[in-house]
Amino acid sequence: MKNGQRVIGITLLGMIILAGCMLASVAYGSNLIPIGQVLQALQNPDSGTFEASVVWARIPRTVFGVLAGAALGVSGALMQAVTRNPIADPSVLGVNTGASLFVVIGIAWMHITSSQQYIWLAFAGAALTAVFVYGIASVGYGGPTSIKLALAGTATGTALSALVNTIMLPDSSVMKEFRFWQVGSISGTSWGEIRTILPYLLVGFVLAVILIPALNALALGDELAAGLGVNVQLVRALAALGGVLLCAATTALAGPIGFVGLMVPHFVRLTLGADLKTVIPLSALYGAALLVLADVLGRVLGSPGELEVGIVTAVLGAPVFILVAKKAKVRSL
Picture 1 (cartoon, rainbow, N blue to C red):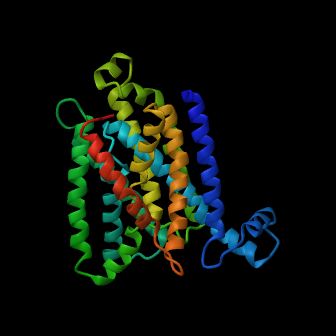
Picture 2 (cartoon, helix red, strand yellow):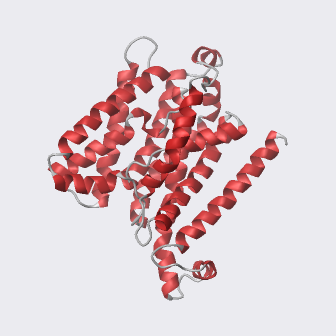
Picture 3 (cartoon, rainbow, N blue to C red):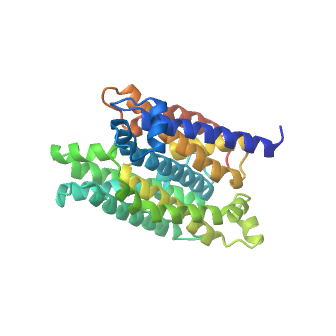
């Protein structure tokens, strides 16, 4: 099969999977709504029936699952392209840990309780951490190279994790409140919260699309990319910014959700090759499908309660991470 036909086929497959996952997401919960009634509720939102009210109450959660999954998938693809590291994910610049630190500070010292306050604190922590890591990596010869970014992000993330534990562990009430956010969940999402993060997601997606040609050149090596007229440091900075915006906006609202940004881009590259013209859009598509599917699985497996989506993605992603890490010893991007 020609590569173009493979791309079309895998795209159509992803769209079908995503549509099925979205239907399951609005149908399944503490009250199971048959698919036929779900479709009727979507066609007649003002019908006033119990089923319609339940379906439309679940739609913000499903929509955010799509946006968050797409954002994490694209963010992972960007981070892997920036660092040329196939086991990098959106947390490679310490974004998740920075968000966690600011949230735990807010809970412990500012006594915040609302999700809106979590959003701004987590976003500020993620953004400042990314800027700090990029600044550290810029010191010395060659500027912020791939290796320096990965090392600076890992070191910063480790240090911030220690600070999070130092603040959280002495107070059981802080630990209880923080752990609910930290586990990663998309439940209870409102339209207002989605509107809060939507501008940052849009900027991140636009940057990812605009930078595709330059990032493809960057994959050939810094010197060759520079010879082709690419401003290597600017492209790497903008790509990192796009990845941070996507990851930070999602993390701010849902908490840190791991492995989506690792699994999805790797699956797309394995299936269709490393061309970012296909990797980035299909990472968005399959990232959305994976996160919504994980959310549905969490509700099914945790019934009558539910497992947070971050737990499900961790269970799914850990074996994939081990396999990718083993292959990365002999093959790089």
